[in-house]
Image (cartoon, rainbow, N blue to C red; front, side):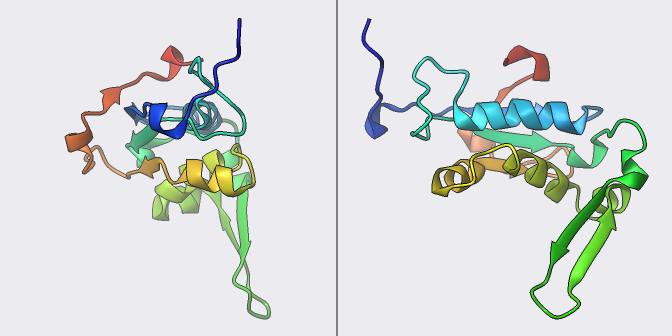
Length: 146
């Protein structure tokens, strides 16, 4: 049986909505990264972007296990002298819950141009509302895609 090699014009992209209310951050991020890469499709190829679009709502209600809210730190540098910034996960979720999910998913995607293209198909929103109703996204429970 020959290997399927889809052309760019043959790639079908769907839209999914995932509710992050009460979901564990790491488990949610692995499922979302898998959908963005297209690993759930028969036509998956590691060198092509065959993944679907994902809209994550209720990012502010994400759950962290253990003592991660206080112990896990997000660090970045502003590129200025003494510009190392450090924020706990609890403070980051309170201020920017979208970034927590985006950074967790981006860490699970390839660190190449292809990975950056896949990350652009992720849309994260703090509340339950999102502006992508015109794409008719399908609601998706976390356990449905493996």
